[in-house]
Length: 269
Ligand code: ADP
Image (cartoon, rainbow, N blue to C red; front, side, top):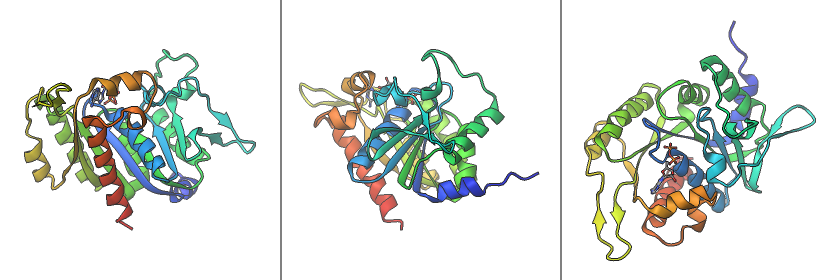
């Protein structure tokens, strides 16, 4: 029997832009980019939601300093996302774990059902943007979002320059092609290091074949973000880097990239 998608589609209809942030590999900075993109968009005056569906390693609560937050319900049985600010709502599987270190041991169908719940039965209200932080790879989670949102899925692929990360990017880009998602482009994170003393730029992971690959897939690099210790340090302290990072090369590169993403989507309609 076909599942009735009316409630799901009604909920999705109230969200103007859905942005799926994903990567082929873990540890490339996907959650950092998703969290900071959400904060940036909210700062520009948009109503934003961040949905963290990384069931096995939800890191949005830590990055945004919301580790002790818990989900509450409404009288009519809906879940309420946690408000980081009045214009930034956050829902993470991390909010639902009793103990922070308890792993979620779920198979595909349970995760698919949970993602549906997170959209259908959560009081997101009307949103300009929903930024979805998906686990690495092209498994059930990004696939479910892609199937729910269809061609309205705006995808961002995050990678680092190394060859090993790049072979996974190819898979992520093929995934976008195959599912006909609206691929916004690729973020090359940890792209280079700028010496704080002499400003010399070093490509510590070398220069991969990303430029060739993006041509093949007819997409573009949204931004190259340098590796900078304060990105990790501020995330560990739960302070959004885009708010607290100051005018560093990484902060400037991130801001420029987020501006580009925003203008791509704002100019679409
Ligand atoms: P993923 O979601 O891909 O697993 P995370 O966003 O959790 O990756 O980032 C992995 C680690 O790398 C975190 O400690 C994060 O703070 C750090 N990190 C991400 N981007 C940068 C960067 N540009 N410079 C320095 N550290 C970074």
